[in-house]
Image (cartoon, rainbow, N blue to C red; front, side, top):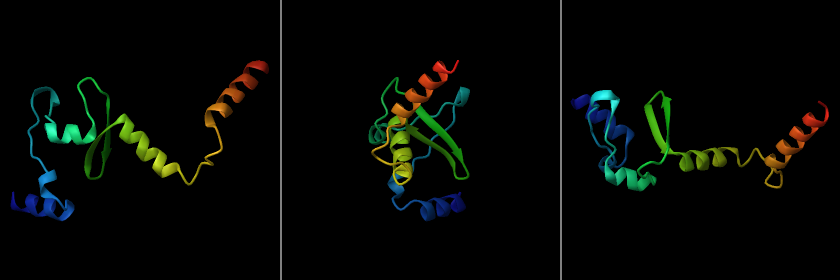
Length: 97
């Protein structure tokens, strides 16, 4: 248990952000209210689970989209409309049969 606490303290600056919980029947875990509120998670809202080397990342779709936009901001011209391009491509495909 001490090694676990050392690992946590090395990876998290604010230990108050670290909560220990149990996996219950059916693989359920409880996300504490403080964390749900901080992430904007509400009852019935979809979340995204991402498996990585460090574990599972849980986020709302809005937060996931925000991260994607941040990662892509330097790669996509802000004056370019991907939606308009998609519509144009679909119309060309439909016209060409």
